Length: 499
Image 1 (tube, rainbow, N blue to C red):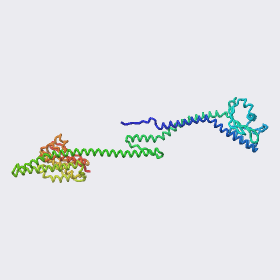
Image 2 (cartoon, rainbow, N blue to C red):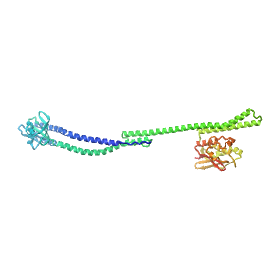
Image 3 (tube, rainbow, N blue to C red):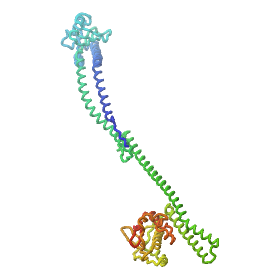
C-alpha cells in the first residue's frame, strides 16, 4: 500500500512566523526601552551639554573674552542648539553675560539657588542634585505649580563671577510619547512589509528544500527520473548534487540487483528444467530400450540353448539381434543429439547457404529409400534461395521430415517438397499422401517418444524422437515450424530467414 506523507507545518510558514515574531519582538523592545530609558538618556546627554557650556563660559571669563563678539556668537550657537539659557553676574549683581531676554528671572533664580531661600522653597519646587562640586551644582527640579521639569547648573566661575545655566525639560515626556507613537506606526508598517518580504524570502530559501523533498519522495517510490537543478551557490546545492549522485547510484544498483535476480530466476528455472528433462530422459530411455533389450536377450539365450539347430533359424535369430541392436544404436544417437540441443551444449552456427541445393543433394542420396517404398518424389525447379541457419541441423530436419513421410506413405505414395518465399522468409514443406494425423494427437507429436501408431512405428524401427529433434533445432534458432492435415495426406513445414 502506497503511503503519502503530508507536511503539516511547511518550513516556509515556520520561517515566516519566526521572522515576524523576531521583528515584532524587536519593535516591542524598542518601544519599552524608548519609554523607560529615553528620559534618562536625555538627562545624561543634557548634563554633558551643560558641563560643556560651563567650561566654555569659565574659559572665556578667565581669558577676558567673555564680553567679546566672538564669544557671543559661540554662546548663541550653544544655547540655540541645546535649548539652554545662560546668565553671568558679577559681585555687584550686574549682568556680565545673558542669553535670555528675561535676564531678571534668571538673576532671581540664580540668587534663590545661592541663598537657598525665597521662591524656590516657598513655591513648592522639588529639586534633586545630580552633581555637586566646589565650583558648581547641577540639579534637576520640578515646578510644583506648573508640574514642569527643568535642569539647572549654578555656581562660581574662577574669576569670582556667579552663573546660572538653565534648560527646560517640559517636552521630554511629550517627545517620548510622540516618538513611541511614530515608532508604533512605523513598526506596524515594517511588520506588514516584513511579513510579505519574509514570506518571499522563506519561499525562496525553502524552494530547494521542497524540491529535494519531492525528489526524495520519488526516489522512495523507485522513480529516479527527477533531478535537482544545481545552481552551485550554497550548501543546499551541494546537497542537491549529492542527492542526484545518490539517485544515479541507486538506479544503477537496483538495475544490477534486478538483472542479477532475473538471472538467478532463470538459472533456477533452467536447473529445474534440466532436472525434469534428466528425469524424463532416463524414464523414456529406460522405457524405449526395455523392449529391444528383451528381444536381444531372448534370441541370444535361444541361440545359447540351441533352440533351433538348423542354420536358417540361427541366421534368423542373428538377424533379429542385429536389427534390434541397430535400432537401439540409432535411437541412442538421436537421444544424444536431442540431449545436446536441449541442454544448450550444441552451439548453433548461423551461416548463409542455398536451401534449394541442400534439398536436391539430400534427395539424390535418399533415392534408394524412395525406390524401396515405390514412392514418387516431386519437387519443382527453383532458383537458388539463400537462407541463414545451421546447415548441418537443417539437413537433419529435412532427413527427419523425409524419413517420416517415407514411413507413412499410403494411397498414391507421393512425396512432394515445396518452397514458398514470403517477405524475408522461405517456408519449406514436405507432403506425403496417407492418413491424416488424428486431431487429438497433433499437439503431442513433437514430444519425445510419442507415437501415433505404436505398432507401425515399431514395424519400421521408429524411435519417436525425430520430431522432438526438429522442435529442439527450430527452437534453438527461434524459427517457426508445424504440421497441417489434408484429406489425402500430411504436410510438415519449417521456416527460415532469407535476410
